[in-house]
Image (cartoon, rainbow, N blue to C red; front, side, top):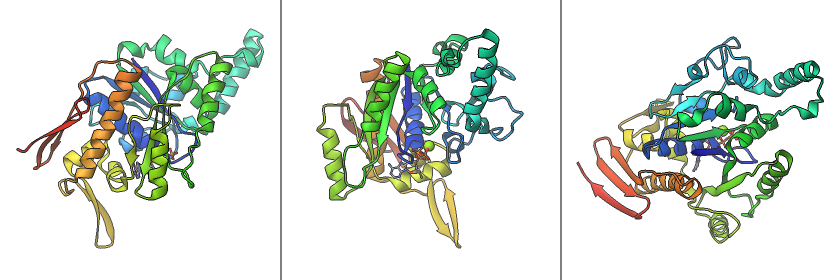
Length: 330
Ligand SMILES: Nc1ncnc2c1ncn2[C@@H]1O[C@H](COP(=O)(O)OP(=O)(O)OP(=O)(O)O)[C@@H](O)[C@H]1O
Ligand SMILES: [Mg+2]
């Protein structure tokens, strides 16, 4: 089973974009995939996939109620399925108050049981919910979490439950390799919680054509400290349009979504995007990244062939293992 948290210490490193694209890749590889969105902020994975209609309704049942063992319904009923077949446990505003709700629970339960607050397993709640109670391992081949890096309680719960990290990183100003925070986190988690946390790979993302960026990318490729199966280049147009297409980069390419200006208004429509070689290449890179995680980190069996069926433009097939592209035009 593939279980991973897409983690980055800093904001805006394309975590949500990466999580969405990885989830759809794994689904296309023939796996049953579930994504859990732990980020209550705007621009999260829930809004990307256009799910979570009740995320602002405090009365609605949501993941926090389940983590805190006060559900208002079945866990099953929280799950929504995106157009591309990925199951999603959507975000809810209550995630923003997770810690204060958790503190209340801890105060109450430790009071009842006459135990000290430090003894309460505050980082093990998600683990218990997903694996012991809901046994999601029987239902899914892969679970991915898009966490909120600033909310320690939720992040630690996510890592405790998943045990493996995928780390997208953006080129820093001077092109230095700053992953100190990441290594510290992995070590801290391991010692504090007595678990092993593995780093599947680091994904340099948003790498541009400047010398500093290219230098940066090279540094990553040449390191032995962690795996860097692919680097994702700067692809603002493709990735930004995911938020209009309400789906993955594959969907943007296949349905040919394009965002453009008309009469002072920004409009997004399918059927208009040009087929660009560099974007096909990026789709292939994303698929290769997912294949690396699935096979190298988790030993899963997958379909390594990616077929993009582009509206009105025929099919493009890539095999991420053979490194070959064959093109079939309809
Ligand atoms: N490879 C890329 N090149 C350029 N822009 C990108 C790339 N991938 C994603 N983006 C864009 O960058 C913006 C931020 O991406 P995203 O929301 O995935 O980051 P994040 O790490 O989840 O942010 P946050 O920390 O706020 O959760 C989005 O507008 C997205 O479309
Ligand atoms: Mg995000």
